[in-house]
Amino acid sequence: MTDQGRVLVVDDNEMNRDLLSRRLQRQGHTIVMAENGEEALAQLRSQPFDLVLLDIMMPVMNGYQLLENLKADPSLRHIPVIMISALDDLDSVVRCIELGAEDYLFKPFNPTLLKARIGASLEKKRLRDQEQAYLQRIQDEQEKSERLLLNVLPKPIADRLKQGQHTIADNFSEVTVLFADIVSFTQLSVSLPPASLVELLNQIFSTFDQLVEQHGLEKIKTIGDAYLAVGGLPMPRPNHVEAVAELALAMQAAIAQFTVPSPDGGTKTLMMRIGIHTGAVGAGVIGTTKFAYDLWGDTVNTASRMESQGVPGRIQVTETTYQLLQQQYDFEERGLVDIKGKGVMKTYFLCQKRSN
Image (cartoon, rainbow, N blue to C red; front, side):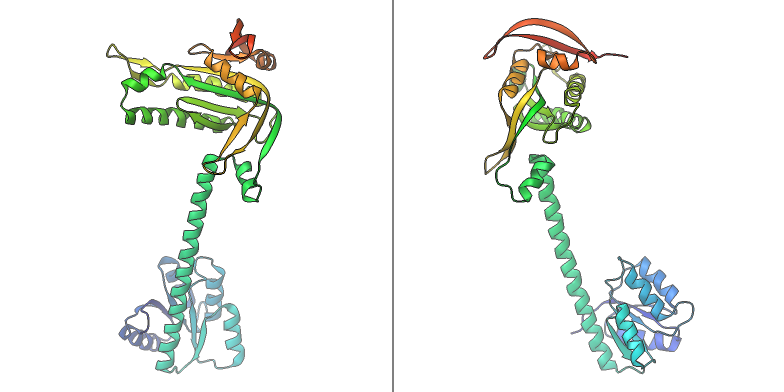
């Protein structure tokens, strides 16, 4: 049984149009008619069709010109075209096939042959449509997988994995590492329902994610209520220290916009401790299942200590980071602090960018 389709009949002869239309409608096809190529092109661009039956000799725009226009348009070139013409010379047939016609029938046409050719063309169109839909589904799945991969890994690292690298481990001589932690999160987790707590963390960390992207930095991971970001990798950049300083100040401003219920029945503003240190790190992909891009080395540990032994609402930095930023930013010297695992260190609080 011939598949039914939506067919555009293009012929300047009204009698020919009516004859074709009545015959095809009896076979169950939906028919639209046009009396020249220009009118047909307008119809093709305004509604979908499964097949075009096209005469050659027409005024305004002939069949050759319409066929050429149709096959040059990426949104229309997939529609099959059967030429139906009184021109029975071989040159005309060859020209139409070279322009992309699906088939060629001579007038007066044989009804049985016409029905068979239309059926074959519609079947090819149906199979092409199925193939395109399948390819689109594959592309959609690939894009979804790509988005998921980029949620786990930086793009340069994801690209290296896709190129076949199984082990990724790099050393960076100088990066700036930032640790941030929400103050009194343990008490907060007891007082808030789990769903509300997760929603709050999602809002906070989504805000931080936007800030990280805005400053051209790399988020490494979250651990509970802790947030780890770094500047200067996986692609080195000369101003990573300044970029991380700007991120820290923006994060402190952002966290102040979030409030939670307080024990007295009111609300209180959330606060963070932030720690920053600059130095060398190793970085790479850890694990084979649920893998992650992670950092290691003394610089990471020191930045973590700057946060954990910092002060609520302040950004504590090491002397190394201070020396790199002191010309552009205002600091408050904290003095000598006994840092667990590091001994006595001189640290500073980052206050603000210095106005010129």
